[in-house]
Amino acid sequence: MAADTPPPRWLFPAEADTAHGADEEAARAREHRLLRKVLEGTAASVFVLDTRLRYLYVNPAMARMSGIPAAAFLGRTVGDVLPELRRPDDVLRQVLADGVPREVAVTGRTRARSSYAQRQWRTVYHRLEDEGRIVGLCGIGVEVSGLRQYVAELEAAHERLALLDTAATRIGTTLDVETTCRELADFLVPALADAASVEITEEEIGGTPPAAPGMLRLRRMALSAVPPMMRHLARFGEPGDHVDVQRGSAIRRCLDTGEPWLGNLASDELLRRMAPDPGRVTAYRAAGIHSLLVVPLPAPQHPVGTLILSRAGESPPFAEDDVVVVRELAARAAVTVSNARRYTHEHTMALELQRALLSEPGSPHPDVETASRYLPAGRSALVGGDWYDSLALPDGRTLQVMGDVMGHGFAAAVAMSQYRSLLRTVGTSGASPGAILERADRDAARIGLDRVATCLLALIDPGAGTITAARAGHLPPVLLRPDREGELLEVPAGPPLGTALCSYEALTVRMPPGSVLLLYTDGLVERRGVDIDVSLRALTRLRLPLTGPLDGVLDTLLSRLAEDPAEDDIALLAARLRRAPPETPA
Image (cartoon, rainbow, N blue to C red; front, side):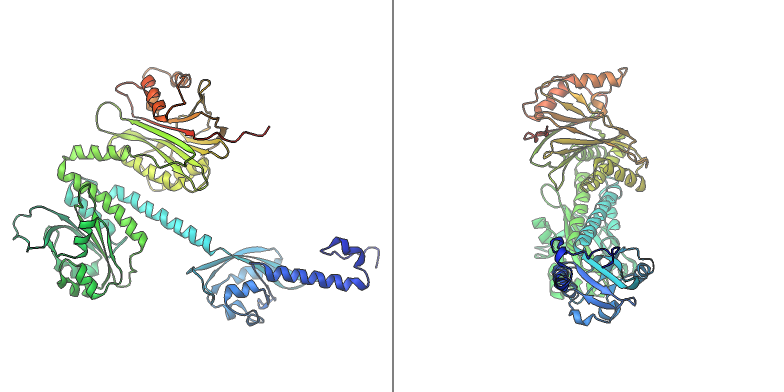
């Protein structure tokens, strides 16, 4: 062997000395067998293509993935073997041309059975050369259909949440029953149905003969449909007409049980049982209706009416996710309808806004204990834009949220609800607090929220015993300690949400055993004629008993700092670890 020729490289270095002469072929054979086992035993799809992108080799995983024997691939292209698989061959030709490996997405369907309607693989392609001659490509692919489906479902969930957020500004803009019902029906068509009608219960309907025995009388408050269906549905009556409902119908069942009724691709017999009267089935079919969804408008004592949705023609049947969204929309609309019957416009609006603001935050993980307080400014029932939340993340961490929309009244409360929903959606992504604020800032600007909001996020990790905080124009959190003064955490300040400036940094600190993390709005510390730094020092210097319930800690804090009546809304959110975090290694 020439002096400048490197020795052969074997998978087993110990055999290098014996790999010359008679044992060299045996070593090569052993190496070949081992590599063959790796290729044939891996779960990844491995294949080799020639320079014309025809298969030279496929491993068993590739055959199983495709549902086609390996021998059927040889000498054929992917279009020949798997015509429903879409692969960017232009990228493969680039790899052949310049030798730079590339990763591409391959999508489509194969003959093998799969639980995924649309399959996807991430595949890396490498150029193969033999003594300087290009002989083809090697591809290694891993199926990511499950991840892709998860992402698609997550995106669908975000779209549903965005739909609900939009509905908050378009349904229930007044406390007039007819207006609310019309807004609900118009919002649902065509977003979720081809036709929608709203009927409500009334004890007496003047100007009409009484209902027949056993029939329940409702009043149709709204009807909306896509243009081709409206002429068919007009025969069922106009808004304001009464509707008599038979016993055993889906509408009666919904009103009695408070649960929705779903009839996808319903037969004529099923339609006869669900309709207010059997004579409507012919009209349903003439309009092309094939699926119906009846959802009650819930109220504390008894549903106040029903929402009926239908799909026709080429529209798909209703999915379970559709039922969830429609139930939420119906619940929101029903609140307005129910309260409009019992209260004046001003009193009902204040009551509903206050109920939305005072709703409890989400549940943290069992390792984190939380408590919250909200005090409206002054002695009125009007509310502002303060909110708080506690989100349990899948990995055992808990995200604490405190925010404040500028201003008071109806507009501030609506904006608060939108920001809160936005943070709930983005916050569960598992991203860092800074990244969550950046995403929320972009989304708030994108959807056109006309009020900015300050916000503070604190991510509590019980396993690590740490707090990671980021803030958007909000006052920094305070870490209350049982053995000394509280600590004002110097979290880098970022711009308020809704400015589209998207620049936030985070701070991570230890959370000592027995300490309490306090998030608050400016109503707690801002005083006329008093410098904010003076008020913050007064807050940190409070010596509070931290061993008792957190509710008691907040009550003591408010009794010492809050004025009566408060000049501004005050929101508080406290958190404490239920068990001591692990010790930091020396």
